[in-house]
Length: 233
Image (tube, rainbow, N blue to C red; front, top):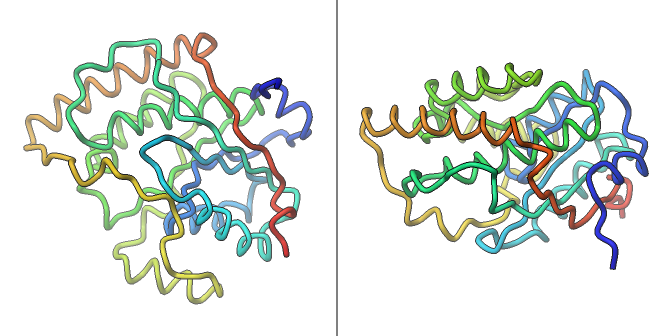
């Protein structure tokens, strides 16, 4: 069976120029990021699939809810998390940084395929102690993406608590649970002291830059492509 490439998916689906690529887990934060972003830009929602992520059916439930609000033409793409990122990744400690490295690569590849200039993450204020969502990491990510002509957007960074996120979803009539895949690796994550965090983030930024420089050499496997209208029961 022929596997659909990102460029083929973009050509087939006729993605509008100027769209916003959103890394979409289906959780509260990426859901709110999509709801805030669609007011200004057409969206492409990108969900990562991997053996350590369980429950893609939950993401589909969220898409069913969003199909009542977002345009039915909104594109959803499921991409297998790439293991080979065209750079050394052996330095990573057990945190979410290595997976987010892969997410940035996938998001950037989708952005290149659909000619988007904006890559959006659902990073929130109340999770700013997570290594990839610390101010240090966000500044590093913004810097490396800018070098490759991509703008980093964080439309829900102002959300200060989980309760605020739940309340925002409630006001919109959206299920306030976290309808995202469960990560079975996360329970083994380690805490980093400030020096180790800085070292990891510096290496993370450098490694992402090397991946983006070799983006056309990284295999991106598209598993599913659908329009949001398909989830409108």
